[in-house]
Length: 86
Image 1 (cartoon, rainbow, N blue to C red):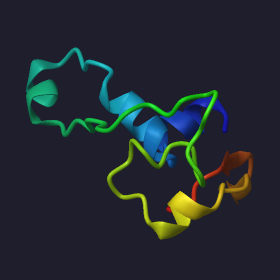
Image 2: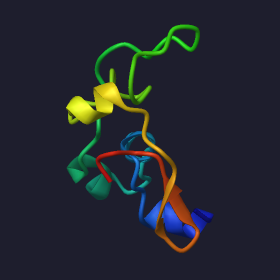
Image 3: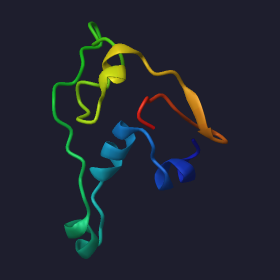
């Protein structure tokens, strides 16, 4: 996706987690926003888990995520994602 679409409509769980880690300069907004804290171990690039390589870090990963690598697909013009849950 282009930067505007990605910033205003992050679809992949990892992108959402990355954006939630960016501090907001407004203390009122910063205190009230919800952060996405990733748990689990980062996958080994040399020995990735079966299925989606992100499934070890995302609490919403389902059986399909642990069995099958997601394919890139178009979700809107110019916005692609490889995630079973989107």
